[in-house]
Length: 345
Image (cartoon, rainbow, N blue to C red; front, side):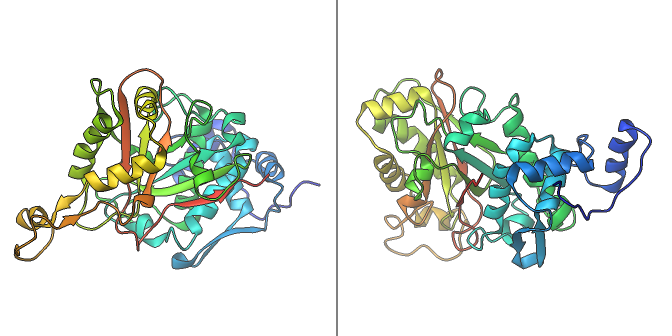
């Protein structure tokens, strides 16, 4: 039996009128949306086996209940296929988790997006891109799943630019920011397994994240050489306080070099944690943090995260080209941490 919907209905003359009506209501992210007809919304709910009235998340700081129907409406508008709906639901659950702490990344002037990493069988089933052009266009699942989450944030939770969303600059990932881990070619344990799930489970990790920073090393033939370049880059991005997480995305050539040195993800985390720290004196000297420089500040080091385990290492990107990337998190660990949720089907 089709789900009974309670959202308000509007009558329009044709498809073009429906698209323009959505613009006029302020329901879009600046791009045209798919009109959320009753049939399309019901198909979304059926794919996730959810009742329309079921609460899938509660945003404590906003006192907003997010129902399955409202998620389905926005998933339709984003252009999702019904089979994407369980992934969108998991992402919504993730940003509602107290550890993610919606109010901070949802309102900060720092302009964080929501980086969504998809792991497990569903990533391959839905063709979520984990390879070439990783952060670029061309994959419907990547583009529309991330867009659906942002539309939920905008239309249901109220995170609209200039009102609740106060990002000074923002970045393109606030439109859609979705990748998958390349588990098929990776020599390492997938991220969701490291975070407590079984390999055969599907999971979504959401991280309040700034834009990706690409770095390049074509010459080094050892793990240390490749990762020292990363550390040189990542150190510059470090804030005065430890960030909640950084995601380190290693593409094909760098994966082969690092794995060829016998290094595991744990080795990578430990090396980057130790070699990306900044002297306290430097931070004081250049006014990143207050206070006079004291004896010992030149050797007292400030890490970019509180623990090596806060570095999320992911194998993804094209097989060719000596490029990889890192993604800084938002604010301090106490403000928002990456959260992983199971995709239930």
